[in-house]
Image (cartoon, helix red, strand yellow):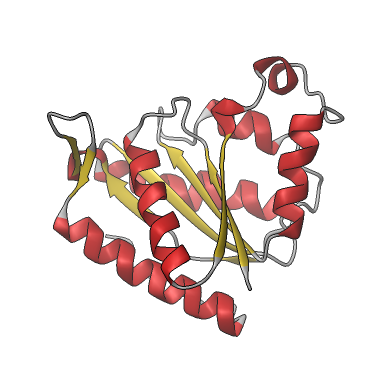
Length: 186
């Protein structure tokens, strides 16, 4: 069974990004993929801020990534870039921590201008960590996810369709171990 780790770079456990990533967990599990969900904001702040590479919590997450066949890296877009908490954790990942992994970057941002963050900020960072098989990525405008009266995230039909297509292609590549992507980011 293939294993995917989903890494959420949201600074909050309740976020539009996490609603998207939780939908992806369900979709992958339906395709018989083993999924681990890691929310960076759940890691001890002291370990992150003081760069404690040797801490048990950091080593546990690093081991999850090492054992994974693929990694989905999700981040909200702040000031045109990935979240600081995501960067803080990625600084604690071994230099080639993402080598030989299929990667899918996912971002939720306020405007379509934030779409470029995937290409110009996140993908270069992931490649420095050894990633060579980075999918085109998925960008979602935060207005396409709303909170209902029960404080649950409701993802628009258009995004559900894009997420489903993205997960289909991603899981197919994961199963076939392909390296080329054709996901449209719109």
